[in-house]
Image (cartoon, rainbow, N blue to C red; front, side):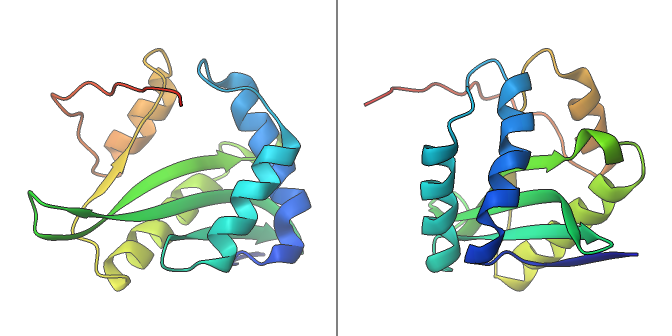
Length: 148
């Protein structure tokens, strides 16, 4: 049986393992457990920055998603950036991702957000189809990044 809840500091080891699966498949990132745990702990300790939701199956965390908060001047209020959506490879195609994404949408609404934005790799057509299935639309905007 699955259960969705907010992450705690004690979950960081399991969450970092999930992030390794995600970052191994993404073009722009590489796994680094030290940096991953630092970021996870920062979010968990500061609920005004964002929230991490986890999905447990039989007491083991098998999926996670981050909602990071910011303010949109275009919308005049709080919005969320959805990051680090990952389901353990052994549990994919079981509906867990859909269940977790729906919980993240509810949490964003509950937190007062009027929009959720996310990024996927350009060649990750499976992820793009997944998000479209849940009502997300592609944007005419192209992301740019400057590493500091």
